[in-house]
Image (tube, rainbow, N blue to C red; front, side):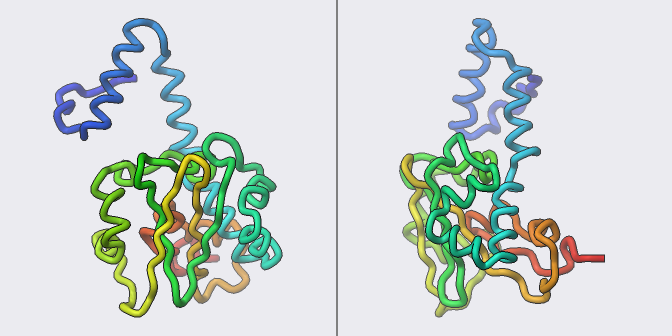
Length: 206
């Protein structure tokens, strides 16, 4: 794994500690940087947020699946083949006209890797973890998401025992879209709650 050490001082404290630990373990021959690269690439580009997007798209297109997802998200998600590392115990929370859901882990960075891939850096950062609970509306505005003043924001705190998936509202004008087309509208941030699903025009049917 190649690193530009000239930029080491630009890393946040958490990333710097990880970098230092990786260097020590590599020098001792305890880990293979190439193997780590494969793992990271798998979660960033192969799993990424794609699994979660497919779950959302199926819920949008299949009312029976959506009901199952509400009742038992762990089983419904596993039925699509997405289970394992930090994704064993899941709950799906659905955005509505009245309520917007936002996920945070106030203690550390509990996150459903098997469903959403690697957690974004900001999800692990102390400012997000503290302010998302205290001032969720302000935090969302910093992400560029301004919600109506009368819309309730519900914050869900992930734990080692339970992790959450936000199901954003389906954009209008997507009737007749396939699950693959719908999934293209679902970003990682939308499944955390810091964004909405993209409007048609993104992955729109030809």
